[in-house]
Length: 329
Image 1: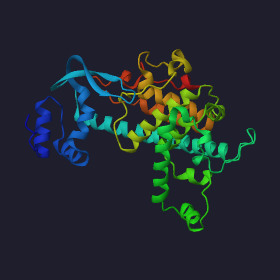
Image 2 (image 1 turned 90 degrees about the horizontal axis):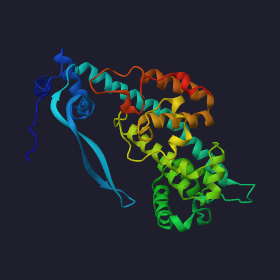
Image 3 (image 1 turned 45 degrees about the vertical axis):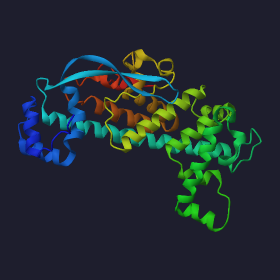
Image 4 (image 1 turned 135 degrees about the vertical axis):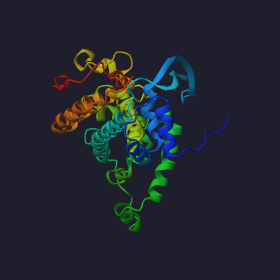
């Protein structure tokens, strides 16, 4: 199949109009296509195209060697009635504001996890362990299940240290000092934190879970891993409002009250609303005053979702507009 031909901004506008999109101000449309790019915006108007049903497509073989299938909707090139370019831009801005709110909250969770992990292994009086170099200590790791992952972690971690030019790392190197855990953890990203937690022995995972009133370390492992994926999507400006996450939030439906939170029954644990519930839970444990402010901002924003064909609340994992009272303690 030949590569699609290059089109000028005016030709792009003409093409959208030919497909049925309402564009009342062509100059404005060209301005936005210049700023954002046609293909990037196409992710926001794709759902507005006319549908002709579904089919199952093999997406990939995952790390557990299982075939993952995703339900894909067949679309025509024509848009549904009332697909307005201005509303597409509003949806784009809506998604951007959602990403900013998610990043704001995930930052708090990431820093908190750094703090409690560093504190737990800098000194653990209860277990009589003094482990300032815990990041090198395989005795803390479930080595039977994570031998290869631990070995790989050590290599990548050393590479990070070698490449780091932060003063607090360089001063230790210059003075030929070992770098304590509570120092070195400051160069960890969310992915490194979640990977380290996953590899820990259950006794150590449980100690960290206790700080969050969680009694299932596997659930926390899952939530941290999936939140890191969301964080990366937000950091790289990828669309999130109707994104379907390939990994589910473990035990989501058992942990949260569906009737109270009014989430969609089938797959809220793989939609944005599931992540909002999980993030709000973390914030309620870490910083309750921030939680109430954050969830109100999120609720107010979601209820301003632009009205476009096929752009429904269910795509976020909820049945309808949000009621802030659902999140009351």
